[in-house]
Image 1 (cartoon, one colour):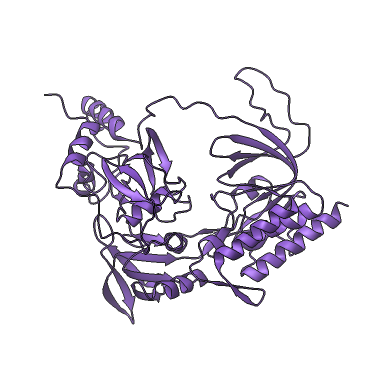
Image 2 (tube, rainbow, N blue to C red):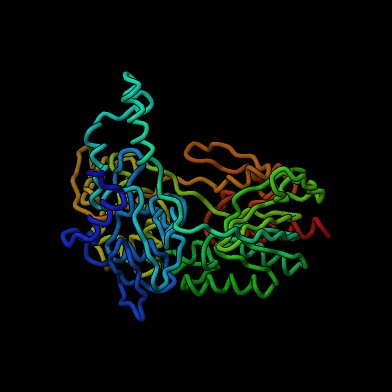
Length: 475
């Protein structure tokens, strides 16, 4: 009998009425109005149109979205901002889509990848059981050439993530834009810098990964203080956006600046074997990956306002579904979805304190504990408890969510490609930035938390000061 293929096994398990994809009661805090329907591994779930699909899945109690490549351990979204790979799924026949970046719309067909069975019950998870001490696949079965060849064939069948698309994906347009200033990041600091520069007569484009500009104001769990007054976070975000628009800045959402090239490199996109003229403009070339395009920008000046990366935590079970970065938990909350009903908090961060305040009336909250006191997150496939060191003794806590806030790093990758210095600062990486935003690259400035300036008032004031100095220097 021909062996069942991965796809055949997946269909069998997904059609089984015994296996339910829901791991816990739905977590929505407010009822859905005019919901859209998604098909997830053959099952229907309801979602709010436009919210990230990964948020829709969490709201429905679906935390385990896939499996790790080697040992097929359960994996789920941790950050909800495109920084981890726990939310990758097959969507409408296209593999490895970041569902935390995909707006929900009616009729989306979503499938788990990298499993034989389902995300919750993956037969390949037996690998983890067979190799409790780890697996050295480089030397596996090398004692016999014939056996090794068979092993390699099997490994090739199950390795990797996803399968090729159902249909050929057409090429995207690749427009090119020349601008005076390109701002990377549409948080409060980036938007304030854009508004100042645009009012000063510069052509300004702002790129941001999120669907809605506003940065941390879009996901902060409580009202925020700014310039001595408490503000509703969404209203304050709209105020920053409106001022940038009114000044004449162009905002480009759902677009990531993914690479920067030297101006003398060949980046004109010529066909293979055809020589293309080098860029003689003297401006760096920044490649931006948008929803329906892959654009090239040639800015005279670049402002890095891309914020910070959340750090990683190392303890047993730290990568299990239900263990979230604080920003991920806040993103869920901002969409009206409860991260958990029994939540353990660990770390030290203003966002963590704000999340605790917001959750207090809706969940049982433990902590925050020192990050180093976390010993283990328990449960399969998702978190069911945690072990925390309290007063020198291990304490077991029942929970369905662990929220972590480790030290952060500046988002440094693009800045480093543009020539900005990067240094290790003991707990994370920081950009080498002067007080006025200047860097080793004459045409690059860094503002806000990416420059190590923390707090909303301080970050916005820093961005305004840097932008004003840029105008004065180029008059």
